[in-house]
Amino acid sequence: MKSEFVPETHFLDTLTEIPSDLENYVLKPLFSFAGMGVIIDVTKADIAEIKDPKNWILQRKVVYEPIVQSPDGGVKLEIRLMYLWADGQEPQLCINLARLSRGKMIGVRYNKDFDWVGGTIGLMEK
Image (cartoon, rainbow, N blue to C red; front, top):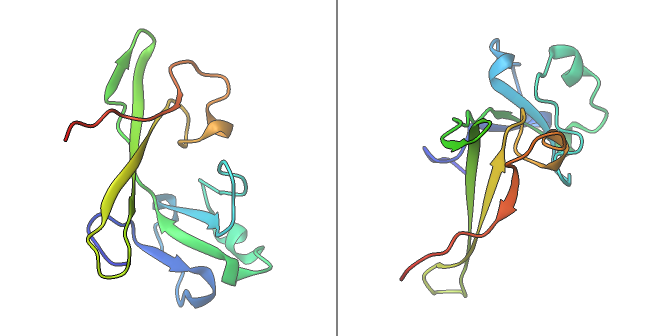
């Protein structure tokens, strides 16, 4: 997918050149749950160690700003939107997921020792 709203992403097995600014990328397995296997501070050695590169992506990092103020400081917020549609129909927003984070990454594993984190849905008016 190519869009200003989609981070630059490369399948590892099709990558022709490792970016010189690896600090701006994350290395992700295609099939992961709760951020397991994601390498946030990726190095060339991490890339070289991947045994099945067709099942990994190198993706430009998304920088989340701590925009929500809690009693203990700033909290990062991510809102995910799920759309469904039948063939030939317009996409319909069916649900959202709001996630709060104070860790290095949004997800359970990186937030287990923090408060003011977790997930919920946001209420939407028509």
